[in-house]
Image (cartoon, rainbow, N blue to C red):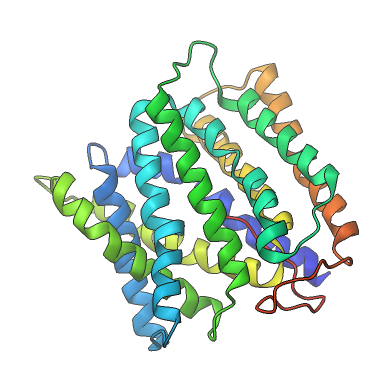
Length: 305
């Protein structure tokens, strides 16, 4: 039962991430994505840091900045390029390869045996995302595709390393460290490429507060908590929930309708998540020469980014 609760709580993160596009376009129209990414990360990270009042020590300084870059700075920068050069459906479908990359990295970096059915389920999930949001006339810009793949690879590696390097602190502190590091690394790019808006309204502030406090601080807290308790092969497929949320919000708030293919895509996504997790759960009790830095107890089952 605790495992089920951990999965359900962790699933909140990608489900909420799916609302980010709607919030950004509704409350922050015309704002530069790099500026939004910077303001989403650093203020929320500093607020959490004031709460925990704990700083990294020793090797954790370099690890935190590497993880902050992978999970936030590099990931969001690549998403920014992909979003500008690809239609939304193509960008999301390319990004959906992340769970598959997490499965591929889990074996060499975590010593996790991945069930073959988990790979097949991840492929099915990518197909479900394509059915849900990919349009027939979508253009395929090579640089945009490369950026989308780079973003997925960055988050996948950050997810696995976040599981391998369990910090000497709780999930709240770990989240604060990475958000601050990611925000600091985004600052130069934001200053160089992101113009400040001429006016800032109450709606803008509300959008930033949601993206920072809910879409970043809270979601990454439960995401890193999930990574500490669940293996990436269990958590990463939950990322498929993000496009489902985005489409659901479009129906509820923008009056959009679903086609039969989109309904089938949603069904495939949920089936892939359930099948992959069940397959991996059956394999979870068979460890493979796990690295010494990874806990070997039964509670060490992972997440995905």
